[in-house]
Length: 429
Image (cartoon, rainbow, N blue to C red):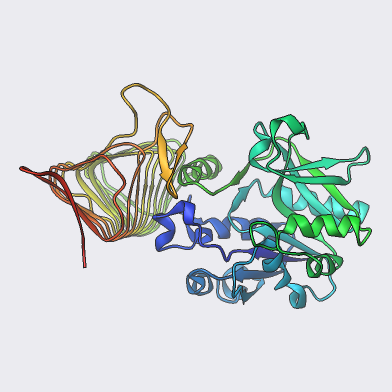
């Protein structure tokens, strides 16, 4: 069986992270999101994978290349020229599939990889036209909800139903198996009201017009995260870190205390006086300490310096410096960021209410009591900067010394505290 992964989207809701990294390549727990899924597919016996690419596709191609040397499989690429929906994206795979059965999945999800083996086994037992993976959810009005008949086959597909419709709580989790008949259904699919070719419409056509049958496979007690919002990366990172084993390929100086499962890659030095509490993942060529405090669920990528500072439940990407009396909690810090001495992140409201974040001009409730900052690549802060919880700082921006960041900072912006005029903001060239 071959696999097709849709990885072309821009991931606008994850900006400023995706301003410099395509969503499937965001590192969590030591590897890009997409690599975690590819390793799961390989373990399930998949040997040929097609990546439908688009946004910043060269980053994906340069990392995975042809797949043989690094993973022992064959990886091919096709560029989605226009973003016209998931059915349109899937149509690019027709030649690659070549009249074979294939698995298709979205490239921005993290799942328990056992699901890949489970659905392949289920498909081979019952040989339907297609199979759709489902999960029981608490808030069905946020998902595409699938209604099954008494034999477990798909009867109806409803996008984000209202509570009054009472259509159950089985959500489509974005992993499928199909025979090539799905491409005939895609050819018959018309533009939706969103001006896209929707894969859910193609599945309905497969059932109603082409007399195909789609089996619903309900995954119980398995992890699934449809990563579309920044804090969901922290959730996925936590899930993956809970599965790591302890390993040390670095250098540990005297008077360092390590507790729990901590994975340390080669070239990293943990300097005297540091305390690391797992699960944590520390990548290559990092300098940690002296006297650093790394708390559980932290992932520090490569070539970072964490000095006399505290990191908690955060993702710190490569070439970032957090060296002098800094606190970073429940945050995502992108590549090549430099925090000035005394820069601190707030991650908890004084009133203990849930933290809200502005996403694409809408205020979204994160449903989290603790959430810090999302900092884009190439950001610098001056000394004694304080950043309020739930804020975002865009790529290439600078925060002046002694500044309190109380709002989102756009990309390429100088944001600073003027003693006479208060907070000032101006574009950088």
